Length: 601
Image 1 (cartoon, rainbow, N blue to C red):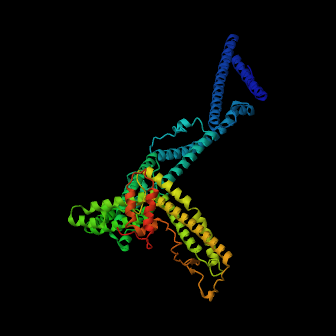
Image 2: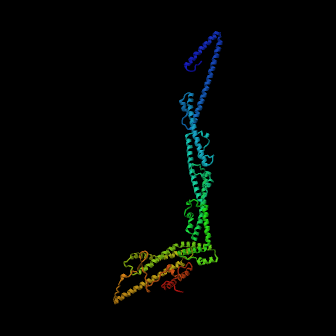
Image 3: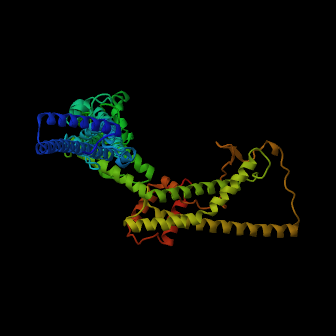
């Protein structure tokens, strides 16, 4: 038989077997067993021993297979855990360190336990992160079954296949993204709620009821309290804000319309400052933009009703004072016309208005509305005439300078050294410059006036007279005046020549000595601006010159000259100015009177 085990163990087993075999043979000899029986029994004994060995070998082989299987399972489990956890170690390194199966099993088992513990910890981390992700996802979406678009979060059992740190970092990154989105949404919700609160305050609406219609949690606006931040809530808040802004715009326009009527009634009724002060808070809306209206209750229905009630009260009060209002607005119309040098419409003259109101033939409100229309039309016409009127003022100012310069030139003592003489010299220089521009100003004014008349198909009237006729008449009178001055200068030169010849023939005659010349004034008087204005002197009959006709000089001749101008103003639009003969005849009529008044018819 073969020995198994260590040499010492085999030797001891072989000695025991040999002793027992010898003892068995001695027993068989004592019994008298035959050799055949002995061989048969020894063969049975060997077969029994072989069976025992075979059974033992099979048991050992089964034990080895089980150990091998256990080691393989452990190694597979280690590989699976390492793959799930993303570890870099491999089972081949364990095989290199171990020789027998029991050693392998003994070395793999602690590793499996360690990896299982690490897996449980990793699963707990994933579960915590997943729970937070699902919580934030539900808060953001408003639905419990929400799945994020960027990362599909399935059940935890399916996630066990990948428990690596890389996957954990992805979940943590996604969680941070959701946390930031929640923070942004919460901030946006609070901003929207704050804006809704401001709008409700201005409009006088119940804030709690307004936001509760969007979501009940919005009434608690503190960060510590739960506030819904879902898409539906944000959309509801945005829609509410849009609705409130539209309502604010509507109420502002409505209140502005009411205030416009209120201002008109205040002006018509001459309301006191105390009455207006009651509505000072409301009237401030006319001076600010829509976004600047933030005062609580300024656009409430109570405020609008209060303003409407005041308008209704003043309207009823206006009906009882309509006659006074008509006359007041007519006076305003006449003042505007006077400032713009436009004739007021005679159809609403005070005498006619009083007669119509007293007779009951016309409703006072219609008459007032007619005057209001006339005021608007006159203001529009004054705006269109502004450029020409500015040039008329410039022309009149130059005419005033020309008049002053003539009086200054007639003063014989203007060059004497005295108080204010240097100021008058400088003013005379400026006056000569202004006078030199008069012809160009008049021509430019005529051209612009004609263009204005062609554009509007009507005549440009200045205090009832056609401005073009006035300007043409001025040009003609100015030419006549220049000719008269020229004749006067020529006559003076002729007289000087005759005087020179007379002195040459008969000798010169000494002039009488002037006495007390220092007591005489220098021909100046002080004016308001500190300069010295020449004292007007009456011209001699032989040296008189024609007066220049301007719109201001026309004002003293309205009884006669304006009637003729109105007749000329009714001429067709292609009429530019009266003929030279007619103008000279009219000018000669008015120049015949020292007072400047027209002759009696």
